[in-house]
Amino acid sequence: MKQWRDQIDRIDAEIVRLIGQRAEIAREIASAKSKDNLPLYQPDREQQVYDKIARLNPGIIDDASLRNVYREIMSATLKLEGSLQVGYFGAEGSFTHQAALKKFGRSLSLAPFRTIDDVFQAVQKREIKYGVVPIENSTEGMVKATLDALVKYDLHIYSDILLQIRQSLLTIAKDTATIEKVFTHPQAYAQVKNFLHKQLPQAEWIETSSTSEAVRLVAQENSDRLAAVASEVAGELYGLPSLMQDITDYKRNFTRFVVIGYDIAKRAERNRTMISFNLPDSTGSLYRALAPLYEHKINMRGIESRPDRSQLWSYIFFVDLEGHNEDANIQAAFTEMRALTAGFRILGSYPVEVAAEE
Image (cartoon, rainbow, N blue to C red; front, side, top):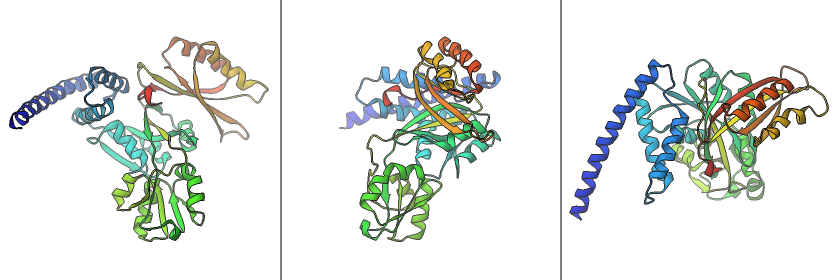
């Protein structure tokens, strides 16, 4: 036993030495970035590092666990490189907070904001460098507040995060029969609606600004007549027990979050692009606007429309695509689409986290 532990001690000493050496080199890189006015955090490089360690991994530790280790190494390095403040929608323990931790690690300063619009506003005012907000759920579709904010503010999608969502029923109640009110965010309610109708038909839904806010309110009241739908992580933070776990109506429930900021992401191996535009009120205008995507062999991942608040009965279309704005076929398609639409905007062209998770 002693010889094995001695061997581990020697390996640990070497790991610590190499991490320090890596950090010194990263600090030099940060200095060069500063001189060239480049962003400290670059998601294209992040994707390269994660892909590299997956290739190098001999398989004793799974790729996801090794990725978590490197996430924290890179988080500590980013902290060394300079001040990088990140904001997120919701309170501590919310799913967006968990997404921010997954992307930026625990070494950076993470600040909560009450609404999605508040996050965008803080980035726009340069109070924080980046913001993390939800954009799409695999069962409930696009997050309307995020789409509206992407149009309202002059910011870009810089990166994304994919997180599996597991909702729990959090309450001090010992049985669902005593619960009269369930607090949660509308997006979370939509994900568990069938469960609540079946298991708690007597309970009234109370809308909250975030799932973590729901937990805070219910924990504060300390009543067996109240419950919250949120993550177990949020329940642990506020001391609210979980009565039932994994209550989402569809078990493969993922939410995609995005990092927003002023920076424009470089092209990586796997990329996504989101655009928005208005259309004239004429027959076939949407068909004609999307035709260049087909002609240039670009895969469309999704399309959504939202009311254009500057014009009565006019709509803004949001289109999600595979590829990067620097790709020749995308540039050609966008040139044609600009001539067929109004208010054409590239909302973000950025590396996606891990293609296999989609």
